[in-house]
Structures are given as C-alpha cells and as structure tokens.
Image 1: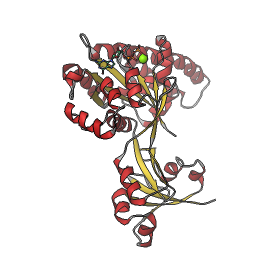
Image 2: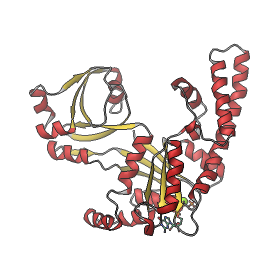
Image 3: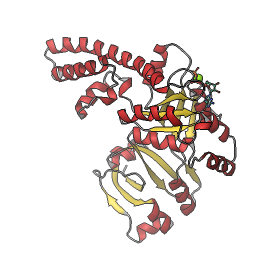
Image 4: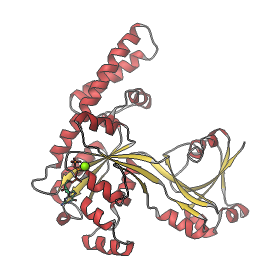
Length: 337
Ligand SMILES: Nc1nc2c(ncn2[C@@H]2O[C@H](COP(=O)(O)OP(=O)(O)OP(=O)(O)O)[C@@H](O)[C@H]2O)c(=O)[nH]1
Ligand SMILES: [Mg+2]
C-alpha cells in the first residue's frame, strides 16, 4: 500500500506548486502517485536484471480549496502531513502563518477530545474497564491542546497513544515541514527558513528547504540538465528525494527490497515490524502463512548477482517470525499454503 501524504499549510504557501513539482504535472484532481527514487533499488536492478523494477510509491494529495473545517478533514485522512510554509515573496512570516494553521488543527482535536470525554464519563459510570485510564489521558490531552500545543509534543506511553488514536487526532500525525523559499535564498532558505526549522526542531519533526517553483521547473527537464541546474543552486538532491527521506523518518518507515528475476521491488514498511507483518505488505495472506525469511543486504546481493547464488553459497541469513526487518534488507519470504 502506498504511503498517503497530504500537502497542507497556510493559504498561498505554494502547496499546489509543490504538488505539481512532486507529481511532475501528472496528478489529476489533486491526487498523484509518485515513485520514490532510491539508489539501492537502482543498484539491485543492475545486478539482478529483472523483467520489472517497481519503486516504493507515495500517494500525494493537494489541499482542496475550501473552508477551515474542510482543510482539517482533509489533513485527517493522511499518514504523514507535509506542511508547506511561505518563505518567498513580500514579508514572509512562516512561523506566524504555520502557528495560525496549527491552531485550526489544535481546535479540531480539542473538540474531538471533549466529545470523547463525555462518552467516556458515561462508560466510567457504567463500570467499563479502562475508562479511568482513558479519562486520564484525555484530560492530559485537553490540557495540552488548551495551551495551544499539538498532541505530537505530548509525551505518551504506547498504550496511551493507542487510546488517543481512537479520536483520530490530526495533531498527533507525523509531520514534515517544507520551507518553500525564494530561489534567491537557496540553498539554505535564509532567515524565513531558519524560523521554520526552529519550529520543526521544537516538535522533533524534520524540515527541509526547497523552492517549489524551481522544483516544478526542474521536473520538466531531463536528469542531466536537472543535475546541472541543481548544482548551480548548491542543491545536491531533488526535492522529492529529500521529502521522501523526511517522510520516511517522520512516519517511522523503512524500506526493504525483494529481488527476483520477474521483479525487483522496494517495499515501505513500519520500522521494527516483525517479519510476518513485513511480508503482509506483499500479500495479506503472507502474514498467516509465513514460514521464514531469507535475508541479505543490498551490497551482498549486488556482489553475488542473485539470491540463488547467495543461497547456494549458504550466505542467506535465515530468520523466523520474531525477526525485525531492517532498512535496506533484501528478503525472500518462504510462505506456506
Ligand atoms: N517565488 C516563488 N513563488 C512561488 C513559489 N511557490 C509558489 N509560488 C507562487 O505563490 C502563489 C501561490 O502558489 P500556490 O501553489 O497556488 O499556493 P497554494 O498554497 O496552493 O495556495 P492555496 O491553495 O490557494 O492555499 C503562486 O503565484 C505561485 O506562483 C516559489 O517557490 N517561489
Ligand atoms: Mg492550492
């Protein structure tokens, strides 16, 4: 399943421009599928020479025009929020604009928490197990939101987090900040981008600097021209590549690979997922019928040329159900029936 990324943020921050850049103009109705560049997959494909190469994909969605409530509802359905801030044009004040935008999300979560508190109070009176623990965490959340803070910055135990997720809080979603800077301020975005970074750092969220307009122009060039232009601006990686890495980091994702003759493929997966859960990304049945995982690294596979060669040399690691899949693993899953 692709990762769902919603481009959100203040009005006129360059969200649609960034959407067009990321989707290279191929999005329709504000939705586009984007292939994630990964040099490891490129190297695997060169070594294995498969019939098909399938990169990881992200489903990117642009904020639709609409009311504040509609914008909040839109942010709610994403896995990761890409928060764009205007760091170009006259008097950019991205920190203030981002805080105003965040306040809408905070108020929306506050309303959900209050509604849930009423329900849980009834459940507590009826003697429902866990009602007390849920009331406590909801009250802590309410206090945090009342102070204008997003839930992302509230320290939570795993079970508290699970309880809070029941109200689909939008300020608990992982976020990546994008300082959309004037071309003249590249590569580091100057003072406005520094403000964005400060805000992101305070939340422990990744932030990146780019020019959405420049990225949109670059997306129309062939790769060598792109690289040359980027170098001129002091940028060493595409906006898409940098956004993807930040989305993976914020969303707690890793990438593992499969590399057979029919297909070499990159699979996004939650960090620390047990092997059967990682296998279920390929097919839901694989979780139930998981037997074992045969694991290697990109470098070892590239050196050996194929999974078969590694297997024959006894160099594939055999891992069981408890194995936690790592970023960069190349895996062959043995599945029963
Ligand atoms: N100089 C400069 N202008 C930009 C950049 N990105 C966007 N703009 C301009 O900013 C204006 C708004 O851009 P949009 O992409 O429509 O912004 P938006 O966030 O989608 O706006 P709404 O959907 O109306 O909230 C347009 O005139 C863009 O050309 C950029 O990186 N540099
Ligand atoms: Mg727009």
